Image (cartoon, rainbow, N blue to C red; front, top):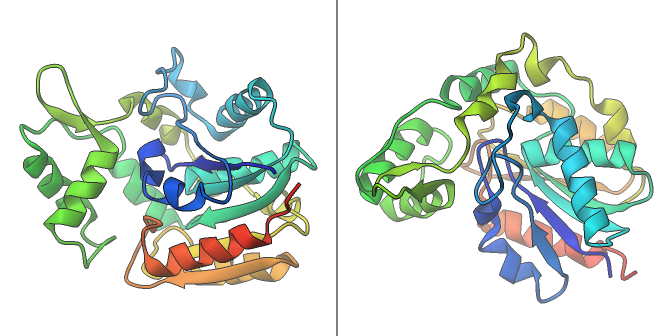
Length: 260
């Protein structure tokens, strides 16, 4: 049975899937990936390797090391871009995919917002301080969160240093390629999108997203025969996948995956 590979967003790590993995693992083997420079993965010697094509090479190397021929993928943001590129460069290996608030076209305003905060910021003395700082930065993304929600997502995205400070759990140099003029906004991924063919595809869109426009999401669903679009209310970029709407849609998608 092909396993499910979970791939996180630009500044995120495998802990984004800490609640989803046990939920899905009763039915499928699940592997949560940490891209280079995040979480427990090593930091890159060359910051210009923090780009989607390098992440694709890393994922292919991982799949080959684990002797996984066919797999499904759940990709949030950057993880979804990597999934599209895997579909285009590894024909026949991808048996299904979930795209969490990402598509072949990304909104410039959202990319600008991400560029403004990636690699910036210092440390905080306590988890409460870190959660409040994270909330200040992302309140428009999750307008209904309370302090418990902010603590939960902050502990997924930050770490405790040996000095007892709370910092973002990624190499700040992941921002280096984003300074290249054009960035991902200039990349046309529609051909990679169509390479998904007739596998089960779920498109999750945060209703408040400034990255994935509704019109783009609707076109994505229209261009593939087995694609389904689900909008998660009162959430921006990106849904945490803890939402009831997202979880129910993922359950339905898992049920569509091939048994072999």
